[in-house]
Image (cartoon, rainbow, N blue to C red; front, side, top):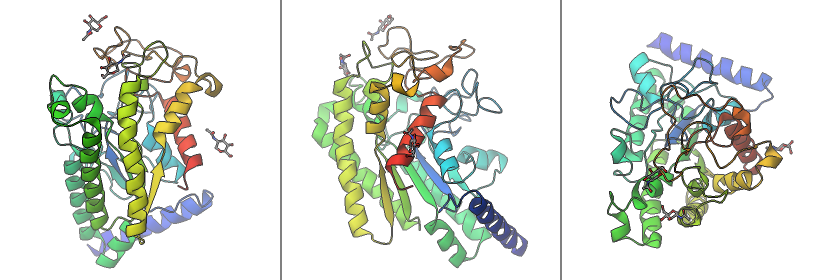
Length: 347
Ligand SMILES: *[C@@H]1O[C@H](CO)[C@@H](O)[C@H](O)[C@H]1NC(C)=O
Ligand SMILES: *[C@@H]1O[C@H](CO)[C@@H](O)[C@H](O)[C@H]1NC(C)=O
Ligand SMILES: *[C@@H]1O[C@H](CO)[C@@H](O)[C@H](O)[C@H]1NC(C)=O
């Protein structure tokens, strides 16, 4: 035990020195990621029969080491954010369990298909809803307590960054699938956004209650602009308006949390705006194709083929596509999104 404590301590020191050498980029000891397919780095891959996983080629075709479960050709947004704040790529929680990967710099709990509501995405098979992602964080915190002294754990957690990007699936794979989910029969869009935001706030405070103090709260993305939903180079405004209602509330929740919890810092990341800017000005950012996926999501553009299927030959010029599959950005788009978010927040 003593060895472990010292070992971890030395690693933390080494890390902070390395980061200082790196231009003092980091303020964070670690990063904990909560979210859906935009952030999943492999949590669903051990679920047999799950439709919401991407552990096969050509997913990961441009990722060193190949497919990991990331739903892109290469790196995803959280990978670039981690890099920007001076942290390494984070292991998925599933790999921490299965392969004993290090939790030192943080863990990714995100699960493709997941939403704020427990039922969201159930049609994909087994996924990990927000609530259960937080239960997994609890297990990580227990593990840290077994490795560090109480005081050190508190300091360590207080200086870690919590990244949360969830909510889009509550629309895409719940509210707007009226044939499978009752939500739109029970709630109008205002009521539904209120329902989501109340639960979201509660969950953020649960994470905060575990000792985390620094949050990056990411807006739900403009799902109406994804190839499975856009039409004639235009985003589906019905979907985007619905998500925007949620985001308006999210912004005021962040404001409210900052006033009510002065010891914590909640940063709002306007990724809806930023992705919309990227979509509307795709050419200026070097993208030639914004309405068609590089792999899959082509035919119909009506939601029948959001995925890129196993061994499909993807487009060769992946850096020129905004979207990798019917609903997820390419690595090239993720890199620019991260840079734009970094520029608009005080990360
Ligand atoms: C936009 O999406 C909504 C919800 O899925 C759908 O009902 C509507 O037909 C779509 N509109 C267009 C123009 O595709
Ligand atoms: C979606 O598009 C495909 C291919 O064009 C078509 O076969 C299918 O019937 C469409 N589905 C819906 C729900 O409109
Ligand atoms: C972010 O800001 C820097 C410095 O102002 C600028 O050089 C860079 O182009 C910006 N990045 C993007 C993607 O706009």
